[in-house]
Structures are given as structure tokens and as C-alpha cells.
Image 1 (cartoon, one colour):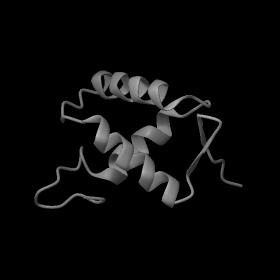
Image 2: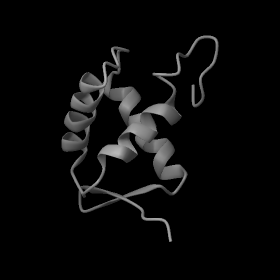
Image 3: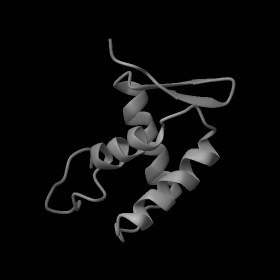
Length: 82
């Protein structure tokens, strides 16, 4: 589920989706804005794997657990390295 397996395609693995979220979080945005931006990014990059909102939220959870993002006052922020 977190990484690709026999039953989870690489396009749906939570680390893959999390990496895509991290790429679109170039500026602070709401969860709704991030969801819309991710769907647009996946469409532009011909990623046709179905991605329900619940899977998106799980990917956000993984990023939060890894310390890669934080949520403050309803706004998502990508943590900067360094």
C-alpha cells in the first residue's frame, strides 16, 4: 500500500502519490486546492490510475508522518530541507 506491490500499481502507491503531492505543493494551499492541483497534474502527465480522495488523504497522512508536510490554520505547507 505504501510502496508498490503485486496488488498496488506504482502509480497508486502512497509514496508515489505523496511525491506527486510534494511536487505540486510549491506554495501553501488548502487541502481542496492541493486535491484539485494533483488531479490536474496527473491528467497533464497522463497518469490515468484512479485516485479516490480517500487515497489522497492517506498519502497526506504518510507525508505528515514522515515530517514532509504540516497543516496550520487549514493550509498545507511543504517543509523545506536545510
